[in-house]
Amino acid sequence: MSLSLVLVAVAVLFLFYRLVFRRQRAAGAKPAAKPVLRGYPLSEVQKHNTESSMWIILRYGAEARVYDITEYCDMHPGGDVIYDSAGKDATEKFNGPQHPPTVHDLVREYHIGWVEGAGGGENSVGS
Image (cartoon, rainbow, N blue to C red; front, top):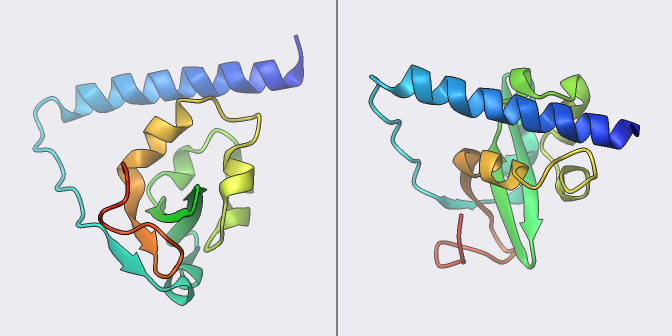
């Protein structure tokens, strides 16, 4: 079995476990309020480049979305490599062969807005 297949299998198992665990934990809890999406200057995104506050940019066509993944970093199956993208455009690494297609569903909950002047905005398709 190739290394990339093993990595994909591990990632899928991790995501499945995480979804099941989250549903069990949230069964009696109030759902968290979804943040109001807004634009951020690139300079603001770049400031969030530490373990205690980590934002990344993911591009979908002309749209550059901002994600606050601070809470997720400790759960990242790939370990500390996630910090290489802190405060930066992580699109190329995010779309690499190590991530299953379901990673797009996972990251959706961390979406906080878009990079001002980079396309997108509140009327953009999806989030």
